[in-house]
Length: 330
Ligand code: FE2
Image 1 (tube, helix red, strand yellow):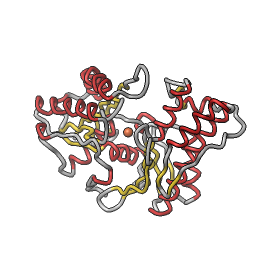
Image 2 (image 1 turned 135 degrees about the vertical axis):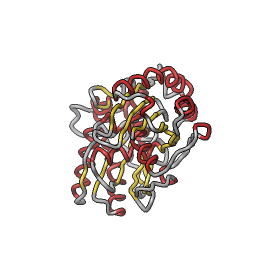
Image 3 (image 1 turned 90 degrees about the horizontal axis):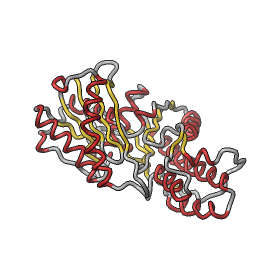
Image 4 (image 1 turned 90 degrees about the vertical axis):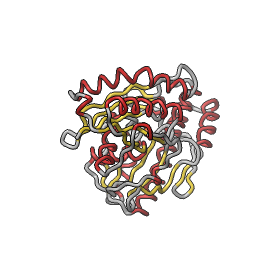
């Protein structure tokens, strides 16, 4: 069985192709919209997706050596995400489904991040730490769904780092050679600047930290401020994850989302997990960030459990929470 997946929730348009036999992922191609200035502009990102969709679809099918006729279903990221971006991805999926007469599978983006991590780690029931621009969320499997233990009360971890980098002129680009520019800027600092640490139970909040770091940037040693920023933010994430790990009693931990590529965050999560007798395995960055393969793979799992809609019924849900999704295999 072969399923094609389309990702378009935010600034990345991705196409992935998955199959139920090894090697499971046959293609994973994407292109990311970079705003000329300021943050992400939803309508411009959507236009980017529309422009790149035909090229990436062709590229994915070529890479996978698959003819579109062999594809059994078209999976698409149905939410949560930015309205114009989601609608563009769904329109591409509907067009393919209607033209080639294939069913569609709406996939929850957060669920897809976790499911592709389960595929790569071989973990059965992991605690999932999802850290990206828009999301920061700790969840773990419950009965037939994931339970969300904690999340950010304001901005995502990636948004914190990127906004700081943009305001201080360190970026864009925000990531160089796999490292965030805030981490690079901190190199050589002996100790971190002390910055506000805001954790409330299993929830956290980054906006106070962002304001304080921007103020400190003007007055204090810049390397120390950058060190303090990532160290504080990563410690906060690790602390809430630790609380959720103890509470949920999971024995495996995965780290997913655009910030999951940070070695420094991986080290903290690994140490914390091992202290509680839990296993931690990082996954390749290409599959941790937003990508089409995770939508294809999760779409395949859902399709096998009977989830499908007709192209004309395929909708998007901007605020579709992970804990609202029925997950038949849990
Ligand atoms: Fe994401």
